[in-house]
Image: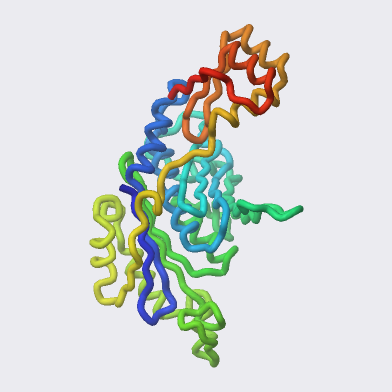
Length: 332
């Protein structure tokens, strides 16, 4: 079962989280593989999307936000777009769109940043928007300040957190066909109300500790985290990973988040929403599709679920707006 664990380092301005997505990640891949048109993801896309999914869960778990965190990369290359959405209750879904053949072993730059046009966007979309309120979005290039392209998703997100959010961050990510996993280490403020002790700290030592890259405690723990190997992250349980990395530190762990309280696959698509979309097309367009194909079939790009409407279903949609077609059928 997928699991998320948060933890703190006792008395230090450092927090962490580690996630192992098993059933949730396997469901993403299963639904994609069941799509007879698109087929399963190539291995490099599978790995990238899995790393993004683990990272998005970690980032959502570290903020107090009622709404969706959406992580996406887009640019130029055979991978057109990769998107992960994580709700505040840790419901997650993910998808990727391809526009060309993917070579075995293709790195990030080859997948989506061949000409330096790749971008990473993180969007916070509130569940209950105020009038005129727009989602917050931060965008960074898939390259550093000198134009050197990143080859790992962890490097992109560390760059984003340091430059857009002013947070020292270390991420270790890995994914295969069974597991998508990630480790996040982040520096907490030393000064002000948001610090670990909840009390203001003053003086040159506190100022230096709050400067990016200058906190010795964070730097030590970040170095330990960076020694975690891909194979260890994919194969070891969370307790073993934490014990191996931080056996000399005082780590305070919170209760694991699993099941309905933890990360789990869920999609917001439904037959009702598809019926509304068909109604939006208009009756003439719907009848044209029926005349050509015999039925209207719509597939969710996120989860792969297919919804089929025959002539009777379509007639019911336009005869009684807002009602559900009788005897409707959902197919995978």
